[in-house]
Image (cartoon, rainbow, N blue to C red; front, top):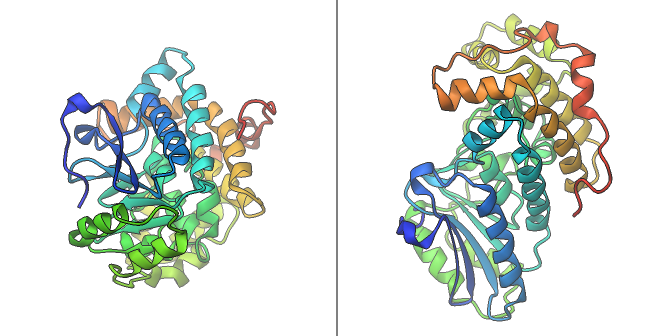
Length: 358
């Protein structure tokens, strides 16, 4: 269950108090609640308001409509700005990444209902929350490599902290996690049947002022199925072996040597992705293993994202997937072997200390 669709007159973002809960509802159901720059700013405003309001004990993030929480950022808008040489990427991602870090440290219990589709920027709004609820309808993915991009919004912090190489697999392939696998990958905490979300929501709006995170956990525990692993978890041994390498060429070579159906389907999936995007992603994931904070990863992501915004691969990936929808991107370069250290270097450049202030 996601929240009922609400009239457009209420705007793309709804923030209001219901009982003891501050509600943040993404309200673009026809666009799968894709987040615009203005919505991101509005979420910050809501977080300010709810933090200051003593009557708000808990914050709930939800999506309007029946299809999902959030399909990501406003990719079309970013594409148009990139084509025109604009600066929306710089402005949008600065706002978004600082907000992602804020969510991770929000002082009041923040509960994300990750029902239905949760992708890209939607992961940034929810997977850093203190309480992350998925359902049997959850389809969570970070498919950015298919757009000539990389898993951002703190994805490079989250993915290396999944068991073994599960995060490397999800980050490079863009494959979808179901609810239990999202718990297994440490992107969520509890699976709750979607039919029980209204009752859980009612329980959360009825809490007392000053309710603690531990008390919120107890409320959620009353509705959870207890599932902690899905179909991808069962493949962990193979995934750990194939994706243990630090070079994409070696990952491809291992997959090519394995004649199993799963290896060959994974190889086929990777062959659809941006070679440059995969190399950048793998480098960022390996660097993030040694990171000591989400903020450190977000700074690294921001400087890489600025380079992506200027790249032909990003525009070509969005064109093929979102604009023309021909699913036939012409990547530059077209092969993993052709991605040089010189091509990689700009994605890892230093940025000024004032570029991203938390």
